Image (cartoon, rainbow, N blue to C red):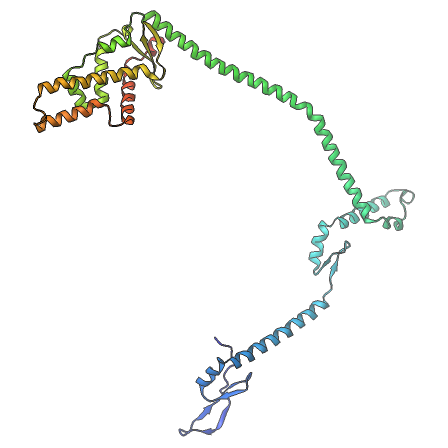
Amino acid sequence: MFPYNKMKKTEKTEKKNKTGKSKVKYSCESCYYITTNKTDYFRHLKTKKHLKQISRKQNANKIFFNTEKTKKNANTILEICKCGKNFKTRGGLWKHQQKCNIEIILHQKSVSKKCFQMLPNASMTLTPSTTENTIPIDEELKHLQLQKAKLEVTKLQKEIENLDKPQTSTKSLTNELVETIGKIAGNNNCNNTNNISINMYLNENCKNAMNLEDFVRNISVSLQDLDYSKQNGYAKGITNIFMKKLADLEPTKRPIHCSDTKRLRFYVKDANKWEKDKNNIKLTSSIKSVGMEQVKKMSEWEKYHPNYMSNPKELKVWQTMLESVSGGINQGEISKNEHKIKKELGKAVDIKEELN
């Protein structure tokens, strides 16, 4: 909204219009502008001339107010600290005095002076106050800095005295290290004793077991096994073939034993000796060999169904069977199926109960 003076409706002319009513005058005191038309009056308020006149008056008022303020500030008395700093208020001076080093020193001197005066023979020990006031403030500051330096020196001396203590701490650390090494060695010894006990059990009680290679060579896959794989999948199909063959043998004559079903640690007999199957390489190879036997068996199924390519039902059965004996469409699926087979075999040939 534009700045303007209030319209004065009190000033009426003596002249009257044709209706007999007196006209109202609108006046701007800043520009000495008078009109009887309200629209013209508001148009005047928007003109550059009026706005300039208003801004001049406002600036003049500001200058007057600032000069009054500076005069008032000039009359105010500043609070001065003994260190030389000036403050406008007494509260600001008091806050500064709580932190001011010179004020603290002077306060301490006054307190000590009063204490000495209270003692008997104070007049003999004390020097006159005039000589005390002549001590420069810089010397007091130097004295405080010297005391601070002495404290730092004593702190360093204590640290030097404590240099022998880390030797005792290193001794305790070495003792702890020896204990931990002993624990590690104990764990390794436990593992070694477990391996020795498993090998002893297998060499003594399972010395007449078959070799894994002979065991796999004697596996014969039937058409019923092929049909079971088609209905239940590759993993269950291969597991079924292994389980049937292992069931025909006594536990001491089996070529596979598992010492840890969780981590799938197997022992196999190969070349007439028992050994740990590292990374299950030999067992994985045996699983793949049985899988190949299933693939070979499909040719026998094709002989019994010579027209399977032209018969939609038989062709669908053939495709399902081929998918079930392939082991998976990629290496990830094949590895997953092999892991499932090892899990089931580990449960069947677990040797933990025999060792306990």
